[in-house]
Length: 506
Image 1 (cartoon, rainbow, N blue to C red):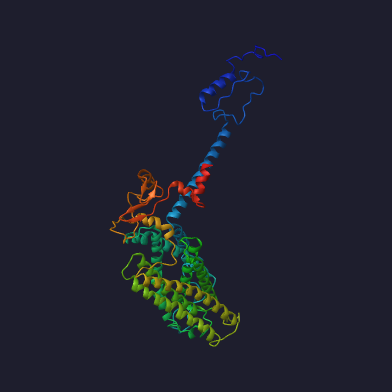
Image 2: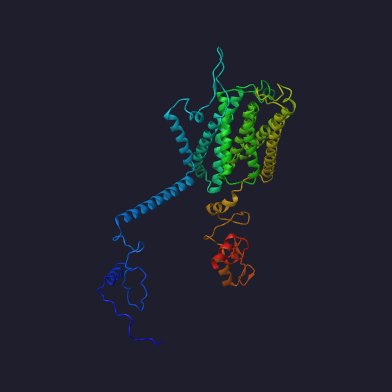
């Protein structure tokens, strides 16, 4: 059919209401995509000129519709506000890790202060439970029993010790590390961890010895561990020390699980040590072997204090680090091996001989063959981990003697993340010859790609390297390693950076 030059329909009048509406919309909204012109020249009139909800403007909307849209926008704004609040709270929690434990502690204390009475169930989290009335005419200290409410005490002080740990490390110990000249962040973290450990065991080590002096097992009397068994009740100081130590080791396990400390080379052994320790704590408390437990506590507390302080002295390059390290090795060997091996020997020789040796659940008599095997197995496993660490300590001592005073922690791995920062923070020193083997920083990157490749090509041959290939930069006769060029870095297989560059190229 031949195309006609006449319009199939007459042109619409410009005074039509749809044309006016289109003209008004075209003037008000310039950003809307303009419809392509058609042969019709405009919209067809008819009975379909009914506004749809999707095309209504705010001015033509009914009041109910506008109210619904305003409610939706308010809901969206509330959601955005909540999300923004949680993002800020997450950032604050990661920056100040002591805030959340402090808030939890304040909530618990506030709940107790609402009704400060022993009948308040929150009191079990703050104070010792199960006090036993003294018998008429008795002069001894108040005794405490054991029960499920003790779990609340351990849980609360686990959170409290988490707060004290993070607060002391971030607000007090970190400024001390900076003042001591420790610039690497990884090394600062190690310093903070060890100084906090030294502070804790510096308090609880003497406290444990004082508690032990008030019991029949002073000084590590193994026979008294089994005499008068079962030991169902204890005085307040004994129970508080035992449960606070349980809180500390539970908090340490949380630190390991949350990776708050950078894992060391002996991370698996450390996790095994904490699992065995927590198992010994619970089993000894539940089955009334607390006299044996307090002896193991003290051997670890005192040796850990000397371990932590020797590391702190090493981090600050103290002049007494050598003699103090020798003292630490002696204390560690005596406490963790000599005394603990005596305890293991007493389990084999005195456990079944002194006191009753039978299993009776009614009288809570648990000193039997099964408990003997379990106690010996757990303490032997703990001793195996300690022997592994003793091997590392002796290796450090050998290197200290062979290198004339350089101590390096075999277990630390902060050099992976902190070496680069430590080199950047190291001041520039002038060298007079090859005897000083320290890395130099010359103009930011003297041995880098810019000075290596460009000068090599310009001079043709530098230090025997023809055509500028792999030039060697010499400073006072010392060859400096050349930083690889970006092209060479891209050729390195298996690196994350090279994979990302390849993806960007694609």
